Image 1: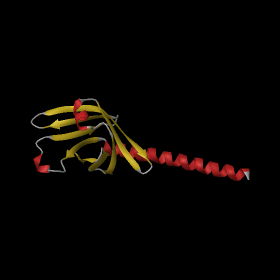
Image 2: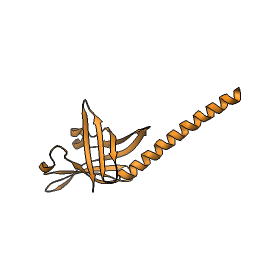
Image 3: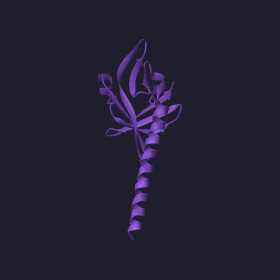
Length: 136
């Protein structure tokens, strides 16, 4: 009887280890896809944009937001990472300046869609806020 309990415990331990390893692998894959320069898409009125917002994610965990109009301005800088919780992935951003604080960008965004061309993230802030990006 004790041998059977040990086998069950070992199988549970093994399953938990595999789940955590899988989450880490998935987060690493998403981070590799996110690295690069992304153009924030104005989904409300794409023709109205006189300013472009570019988010740049580097491979070392640094990020910056550029606002491009007649001039290019580094609006903010900070750090980012991806965390994975079973079936949900999150893009965690922590910017340092006033620009991102004004728009409440220092949050854990849920990654709804991510491929080589599109990044779609959401955040529940007493209503769903979304950001959609195209890879440049």
